[in-house]
Length: 128
Image 1 (tube, one colour):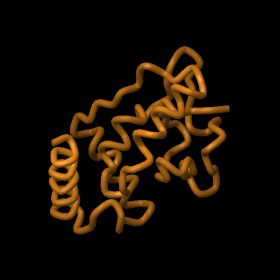
Image 2 (cartoon, rainbow, N blue to C red):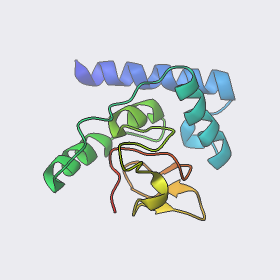
Image 3 (cartoon, rainbow, N blue to C red):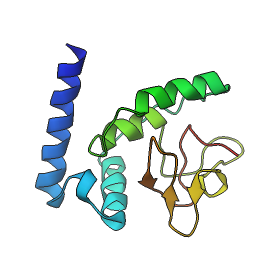
Image 4 (cartoon, rainbow, N blue to C red):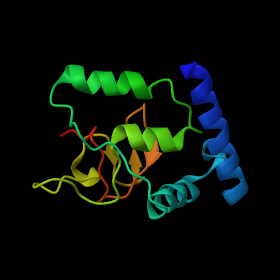
């Protein structure tokens, strides 16, 4: 039952992106993916920023949830990873300082995400 619901949500999101942008996230280039991400937040997307994974085990559980998601499941990736378009927390953590962030590509290289990102963005998979 859960798999059917996930498949319906993925199909709905793929249709949404295709109708709005002419491409699905899997087929979009870097700049279009950035625009898709920003537009979802401007449209009110809320993500799961807490709980922050304090241990490797908690971090691994989030990766286990993200790993099977396809590139077209962009909304789910953002929600589960706690993606934000601004620095987070009292230390103002941001992608720029994360070990997975590729500065020159403006890209999150964590395989389970594999998404473009701006330096001042953040997600709860942030690591030094």
